[in-house]
Image (cartoon, rainbow, N blue to C red; front, side):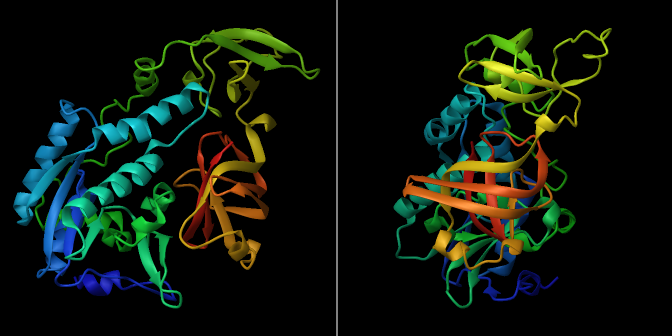
Length: 397
C-alpha cells in the first residue's frame, strides 16, 4: 500500500500538512489497536524522522487497567522499534475533567468527559508538557489515533478540523473543543483510513494489540449496564428526591423516589412501577426531564411521547474552533450547516441559528432544527459543522 497516496485523498481546497524529515513525532498511545497502528504507520512513512511513543496515565497509578495498558504500549513500541515513555496527568485529569463531570451529573446533566479530556489533557496538558520538554529547537508533532483529520486550507493557510474519511468511526465530535493552538501541532493519519483497514494493518504488521477489542468509555469503570451509576455513587452522596408525572392541568403526582438525579437519563426507561391494572398508566414510562431546582425526575408514558422530542437546542459556553465567528457564519448557506448532539448520529439540518455574545467567556448559540429529535439532554455537547468541517461547539442547556 502506498501510504502517502492513501493519506493524500483529500477534500477539495485542502492539503495534509506532514512532519518534515528532521521533525520529531510523538505518538500518544493508549494501548488500543488504533494508536498502535498510528505509531507503526509513522515509523514506516517517516523513516528518517525521530518517532517515539508516549503513554498518559490519567487515573490512579495503581489502577489495574492503567498498568495493563502501559505494558501493552511497551510491547507494541518494542515490536515497532521506537522508544516510549510514560507521563502522569492524574492531577490534571481529576481537576479539569473528573470533578467537573461529577458536578454535572450531580445537578442532573449528561456530560461527555471525553470532550473535556481531549481539550484539557490529551491536547492540553500533553502539548504543554511537550513544549516544556522539547522546546522549539526541533520542530515536533503530536500524533494520535483519532478518526478525524486536521487539514490546511489552501487559501487561508488555516488549520481546520474535519470529519474522518470513514464516517462509521468519525471522532471529530470528541475533538470539537480542542484549543485553536492545538491544531497547529496535531497530525491524525488514520482519519484517512477505515477501521477494517486499520485492523488489517495491525494483523499484517503482527502488532501485539492486533486482536485487542475497542475500548468503550472509561477503562476504570465496568461497562456493564448499571455499573457506571454505581461508580458515581462512590463519589456522590445520596440526594433523595421525587419521581413525578404532570397531568394535563399541570398538577404533580408522585410515584416514587430517587437517590440522585444521576440515576436517571433522559429518554431512558424509568424503573418506577406504575399501576398496570389502570389503562391510564399501563405501559412503559420514560424519563423526560430532570429538575435540579426541585430535585425532581419527570416521567412520561410511551417511548414516543411528544415530551421526549425537541426542535430547539440552546447552548452556553460556546467556543469557535479556529479563526471563525458568527460574522463568518452569516456567509454560509443554512442548507450547508448541520449539528450533532451525539457522536455517531445522522447529521441534523437547521432552519435557523442565533448567536449571543456578552463576552469571550459568555457566548451562546441557539439552533432551530428542521424536525424534532428525541432525548436531547442538558450537558451534552452540540457541535456545529459546515459540511465536514467543525466550526464550534457548546454545552446544551
